[in-house]
Image (cartoon, rainbow, N blue to C red; front, side, top):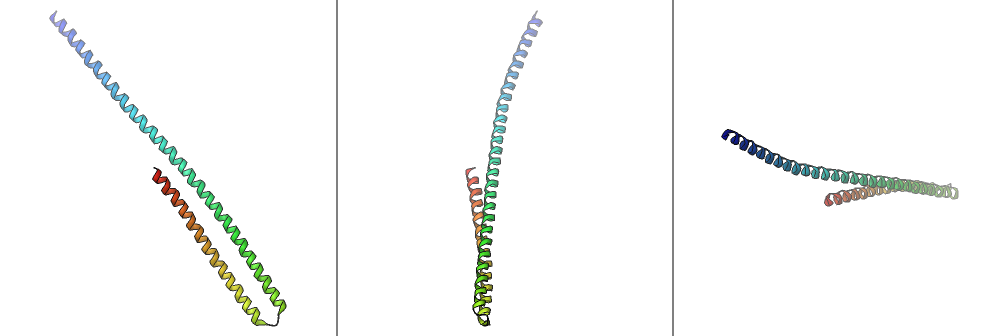
Length: 148
């Protein structure tokens, strides 16, 4: 009878220890499960935020590219107009004074200078536009990095 009582008590204590251990394991699992879920949710939010920022940057880049194309088209049109005007002017002067080669030579030289000025103007304008694009992209990148 004594053995049986000890056996029952031992069995009861073992069940209690086992039950307590299972409860502790469940609590640990729940705790770490919640931590992992929070971490994965945070990671997913950051991934979505990164994707949105990437889309915004690509949109801005496309806008800048389109603006650069439009500016280039306008500049080419202006250069063509200037060349046409100079050509007409030279033709009119040639017609007025066809015998005077001095005027013709000076206007040819003037035409060359205007062409050089046009090239210089286009280069400066393109450099300014590229600098503006870089500044805007840098400000976007730094603004986004500061927000994070």
